[in-house]
Length: 269
Length: 323
Ligand SMILES: Cc1cc2nc3c(=O)[nH]c(=O)nc-3n(C[C@H](O)[C@H](O)[C@H](O)COP(=O)(O)OP(=O)(O)OC[C@H]3O[C@@H](n4cnc5c(N)ncnc54)[C@H](O)[C@@H]3O)c2cc1C
Ligand SMILES: Nc1ncnc2c1ncn2[C@@H]1O[C@H](COP(=O)(O)O)[C@@H](O)[C@H]1O
Image 1 (tube, rainbow over the protein chains, first blue to last red):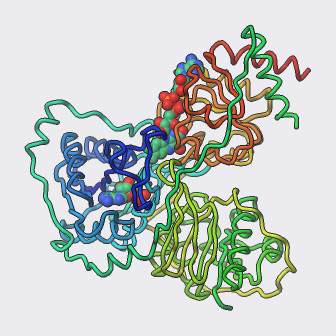
Image 2 (cartoon, protein in one colour; image 1 turned 90 degrees about the vertical axis):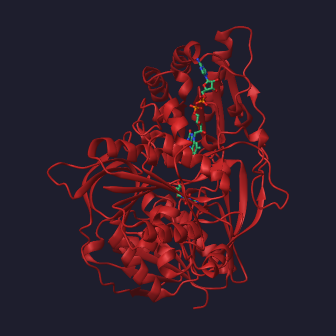
Image 3 (cartoon, chains in turn green, cyan; image 1 turned 120 degrees about the vertical axis):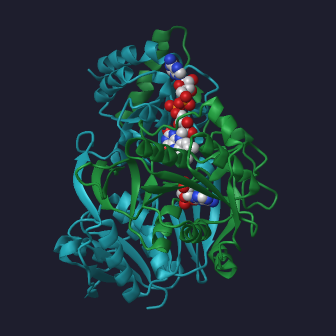
C-alpha cells in the first residue's frame, strides 16, 4: 500500500510553562522561546506507518507544509527510512490554519498520485485544532477514521484494513476499504522509535522534493479566505491562582494523618 | 428566525450533563445574536428526550432514520449536512465526545463554514461568534472570532452552565434525510473499558497516578486507596503510554476533562497538558517527591514525599478515620 503521512513542526510542547512567551503582535507564541520539534501525534502516525510497512510492505511518503525550518522533521523521518519526503514551502503567510493545510496537502496528493492511506496526527500540540485530518478527508472526498492506534491487514481480506481506534469508553475495531484518511493517536505500541546514527547521517544526503504553493497550483485567494475565516483576536497567558499549602508535621505519621483529614473533609462534604 | 443557533443532541446519548451544557451554551448564544435556538435531535428521539429538549429551545428539529439508530461517522455526517442545509443555521454547537469532535470540521467543510473545538466560553457579537479556547497545551488562552458562517463548534460541554428552563416549545418539525448504507467503514467489535458504571467525567473523587510510580503494580495500591474514599482511577499520558493502565484512564489535553471535588495526583509532574484536563477540579492535591514539581502550583494542598512511604499508611489512616 501507498501511505502518506502528514507531519507538522511545532514549538516544543514540553517546554516549561515559565519559558513560554507571546510574540509582540500578541497573536501567536514566540517561536524563539524553545526548540522546534515534530508534533508528537505526527510521530505516532509515522511509527504506525513504519510498523505497517514492516508487516505488509508498501511505500511511505511524508509531507509537511511549513517554513524552511520544517526540513528538519523531514530529515528525521528520512532517518527512520521513509521512502520519499516532500516539503511544501509556505511563502504566503506565517501561520496556516488547518483549512489551508488541508487544501495544500490535497493539491500535493493530486500531484503525487494516489495514496491508499493518508495519515495525520489527531491534533497538533500547539494550536490543538484537531481539524486537518477531517478536512483533508473532505478535500479528497474520502471517508475518515479518527483516533486510530493500530492498523493492519488480515491476510484473508487483503483489500481491507483492520483498524483499532480509541473511543470515549474503550476501543472499537473497524474494517475499512481504501482509499482512506486516518487520524492517529498514541498508545503503548506506537511510541516513536529512535533512528540509528548511521541512518541519521544518511538522511542528510537524501533528496527532498520541495514545492511552493504556486507549484501546486493552489488558489491563493482561497488560502487567504481560509485564513480570514478564523481570526485570533488575542492570546494571553493565564494566571495561576492557587497557593499550595504543604502538609507539615514533625513525623511522617503526623503528616499522613493531616493529609488524611484534609482528604476526608472534602470526600465527606 | 434570524441567526439560528442549533444545539445538536444525539438520540443515542440522550440529555446528560454534557447535553445540558450544549443546550445552555446554545440558549445564551442565541440570545446574544437575537436569534432562535433550535434543538436538533439526531437519531432515536423518544417522547421523553423531546420533552427534555423542549424546555431549552424555541424549536425542535428531529432527524430520524433507520440508519441513524447508532452512530456511524459517514452516515451521521451526511444526515447532519442535510439537516443543516434545511435549517440554515448561523452556528451549530456540539458536545465534546468523540463523535462530535470528529464530525465538526467535516460538517463545517461540507457547509462552507468555519470550525473550532474545545470552546470554553462563547459570545455572539454582531454577526460573529467569539470563543475562547486553551492552546499551546494550556500555556495560553486564545480568543478567536469565527467570521465564516455557519460556525460549527464543539464546546467543553460539562464546563458550560446548563440551560435555564423555558416554556416548553410545541414547535417540533421533522427533517427528512435521504441516506444510504455506508459499507466502506464497518464496525466489527467494540469494547467498553469503563471502570464500573460511572464516567470519569462525573466522578466526585479521582486518584491519579503518573510516571513516577515506576510501573503497573503501584496502581493496584492506588486503586485500593481509591476504593476507601469511593474514588475512581486516572493517569497521566506517560503512565498510559507505558502500558501500565488503559488509554482511557488518561486525563489531560488529549484525555478526559474531569471536574471532581478532589483530584489527588500521585507521582504526576503536572505538565500543562495534564493540567488542562483538571482545570475544572474543585480541589487539586498532590503527593510528589519533588517540591519544585509544577503540579504544586495548581494544588490547594500537597505532601512532598516518596509515594511508597505514603500510600499504604494513608489508606490505613483513612480507614481508621472513617470507622
Ligand atoms: C500534544 C500533547 C498532548 C498531551 N496530552 C497529555 C494528556 O492529555 N495528559 C497527560 O497527562 N499528558 C499529556 N501530554 C504529556 C505531558 O506533556 C507530559 O509529558 C506528561 O503529562 C508527563 O507525565 P507524568 O507527570 O506522569 O511524568 P513525569 O513528567 O515524568 O513526572 C513524574 C513525576 O513523578 C515524581 N516522582 C518520581 N518518583 C516519585 C516517587 N517515588 N514518589 C513521588 N513522586 C515521584 C517526579 O518528581 C515527577 O514529578 C501531552 C503532550 C503533548 C505534546
Ligand atoms: N503544516 C502542516 N503540514 C503537514 N501536516 C500538518 C500540518 N498541520 C497539521 N498537519 C497534520 O494534521 C494533524 C492535526 O493537526 P491540527 O489539525 O492542526 O491539530 C497533524 O498531526 C499533522 O499530521
